[in-house]
Structures are given as C-alpha cells and as structure tokens.
Length: 82
Image (cartoon, rainbow, N blue to C red; front, side, top):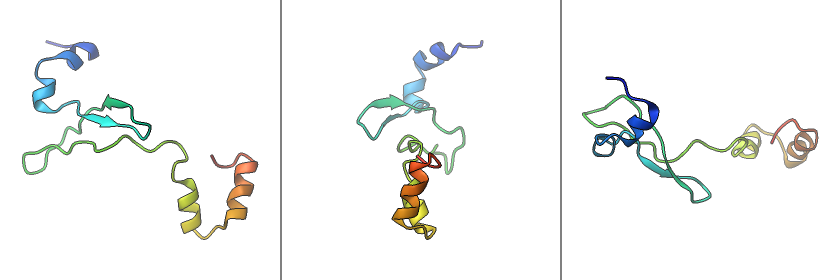
C-alpha cells in the first residue's frame, strides 16, 4: 500500500514511532520535521531545532574569518551578504 504525504502525516504509527518530531522555530512557532531515517544504538536522532535562517550566522563567520565590521557593513550595503 502506498500512502500520500497527508496520509503518512496522519497515520496512527507516526506519533508512537517519532517519525515527525515537533520542533520550535526561533520566533516560537511549533511545527513538525521529518526524522532522520538512520538509527544509532537502536535510537533515531531527533532534530533539535530547524535549520538556521538564511544569513543567520553570516556576521559571526565573517568575523571569525578575520573581516572587520566596516568590511561586513560594506558587503551588506552592496547586497553581497544578507
């Protein structure tokens, strides 16, 4: 039997097996993500949080790479980074 994505989401075994764990975004919105298919020591790793927003760590990474705030501001003004 093949299920549609909605049928899979609503299937009775999804919750007990942890296939769609709930996570909370940085702005407090709760939603479900698909759990990774692999298991380690009999347990599947659950996502702890959603992926970072686009550009969320750009300044931190550029500072660690040796750029100063003036250079980062210049890149932002010219649209080179978010």
